[in-house]
Length: 127
Image (cartoon, rainbow, N blue to C red; front, side):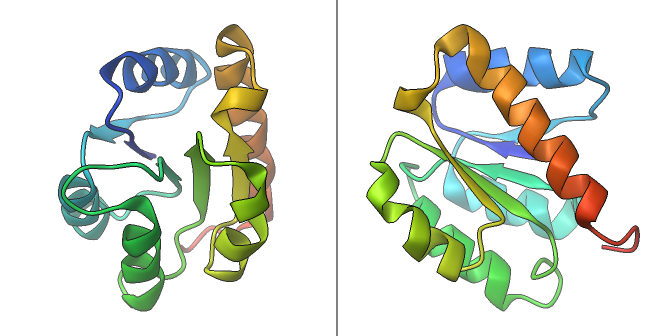
């Protein structure tokens, strides 16, 4: 799994929680690093923040979905953007959208873990 978030605190909290849930995590702190790691590592799923330095999340999502190497990798958007953006992000290829502000910090990782499990169970094994 690739976790792309510029917030060191949230990135680390989610990484610890998801590792405890049995996921192997690779992290990136900006969009350019996230794109490079997605192409190199070809993770089974990507968790993507929208507000990123160097390459914004919306642009990164479009690049990921337009690249044959990464197009089939499910992307969960985890963002502080209002939920009104959800339909556009889903139309752009996101598998799911979770709004950071609507989740209690201590529940965010468990909600994220549930979304990841649900999405991974519906994806063919050869991503």
